[in-house]
Amino acid sequence: MNESPLRIFQRKIRSNLSFYFNKKEYINPKIKKLIQLVYKMSDEMVHSKKSNRKKTHKIFSKKIFNLVRKKKFLNFLQKPFIQQMFFIHNRFYLLSYLKQMRISKKWKFWKQLIQESPVGNPVRYFFYPKSSGNKIFQAYHLKKYEDYSKINLKKFSHVVEFGGGYGNMASMFHKINPKIKYTIFDTYEVTLLQFYYLNRLNLKINFNKVNKKDNSINLISSINKLKTIISKITNNKKTLFIANWSISETPMEFRKQMFFLFKKFEYQLISFQKEFESIDNQQFFLEILKFNKDLKRKTKIVPIEKMHNHFYLFSQKS
Image 1 (cartoon, rainbow, N blue to C red):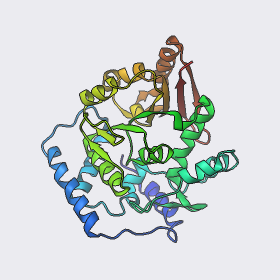
Image 2 (cartoon, rainbow, N blue to C red):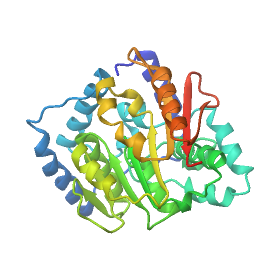
Image 3 (cartoon, rainbow, N blue to C red):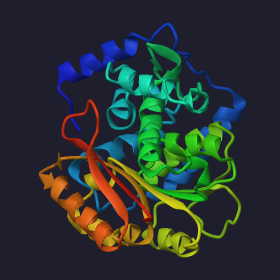
Image 4 (cartoon, rainbow, N blue to C red):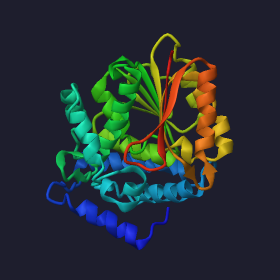
């Protein structure tokens, strides 16, 4: 989690390439009220024990918690530690991803999907300031999965995302299908940030509860509550499991606890790095690949274009 001064400097330079397009946020009574609400919600974390995390995420969770307790939500997407974990901005390889969307028959769809919001003051992509590098990056994952599965993303009735960042993917799926049921499982600290971001977008949020039946976005940090939500998902509907650089960054023992997710979901969009803190992710996901094949699912591991030693695992019903 601790970056070298050179890496921090490089990120700052890339971010500043978009200074003309960035829009600084300022406080207003509505935002102030929301920040105070999230601050009160964070009281639950003051004396809690944090487990099931590798060193990187222990450090990161502490920084998120400090952000919440100090009420530093404004312009949070400009913060270096947020960008390091959650936000890809001015990288040249994203031009290739954007080009693939622009030349596709569905460019009108992708163009709308990557339209950026001012919430958090995201770094605008310097070659396409209507969006951000992160929106382009996330949309590209969806495009690659749609290309592979030949399934229109609008056909999914429920999405479960393991590790939802600051809530960007959830907000994009609500553009795709406003009626979709969406669940994010994440650490409590990060769900607080998601709660703030998604509320700023005026989306309905169901925070750590399982009894809601509407299309609110579920933000869950309890495994038991996640299991309850998943148990209510019927097998006759298309449900998608997303885990982009999330399960691949958890301890092996914790992955065993979460294995029920791979059993439940035939449709899977997973991104991972070859190795994380000495864990051999490639071997782990090869085992998931075999597990999917044993269940007669159509599944594949493919390298991610322009990203050395990073891969997708795709799965779908045969």
